[in-house]
Image (tube, rainbow, N blue to C red; front, side):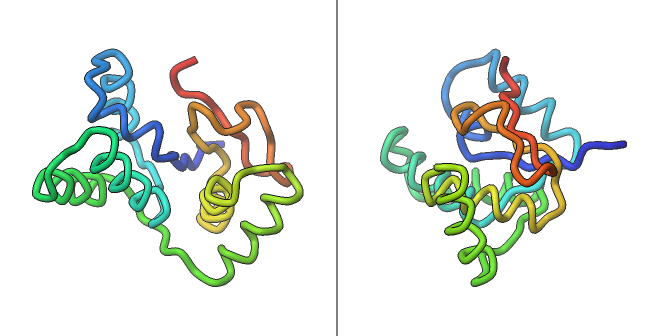
Length: 133
């Protein structure tokens, strides 16, 4: 079975981090089909502006590039409702649960994340994996 892979923002942000080794891993992952959500895009914008202090034109260019390379799942009321359920059931932060809910909505079976309960399997169908481990 071929994995359908969803990426958390913390994975994609290594493209901006200056960590060449992890950025190369992310570039390799992007050569395959990755799925993300609007929540991931929101987090990328927030971190790019706040932590990396990038200009709006640079942030906009980066987001456009990511959107061109990934399938993007919209945030919906159903994803919001499902996220609240997963946040409670699996003790996830609400924003992480939004990403989990979107990954499941997209029929992904792997969620790449460096810091989100690595190894956890959600509803016997979504496995959280650290791509840098």
